[in-house]
Image (cartoon, rainbow, N blue to C red; front, top):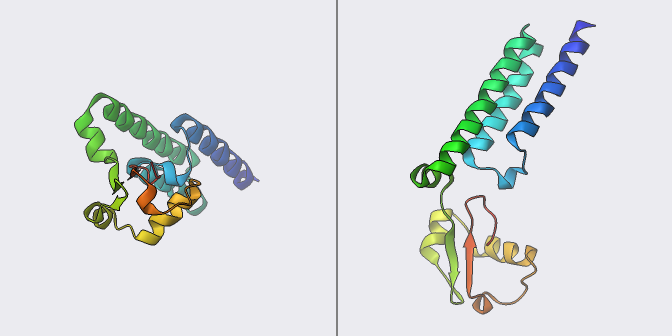
Length: 140
């Protein structure tokens, strides 16, 4: 019976902590957010293997607090924002591909065309004036 209550506590704590951290879809997360969310998933499993639910909740709170701290630093410092988030990279300029940036992003023409199509742009790449891949992976 205690196993059931521990599971309920962990699920409720996980939901509350994810709401505090500001959940997004994985494609919109920054690198630090992704690492923290994966870590929280791993941490929440620990009480099933071990015995301390409260240590798990405290560890998850520490991770979320660290994430909020890192995001605060990103807002205050452009240097840290660039380091942690990256910047948008131009992949189409005046209708032509910026091959160097696509190589840096490890992005293929097919992937770019797919993203353009998802944005409702079904025309040829040569018709696009400027397109960027944002730090979160979205097409801008």
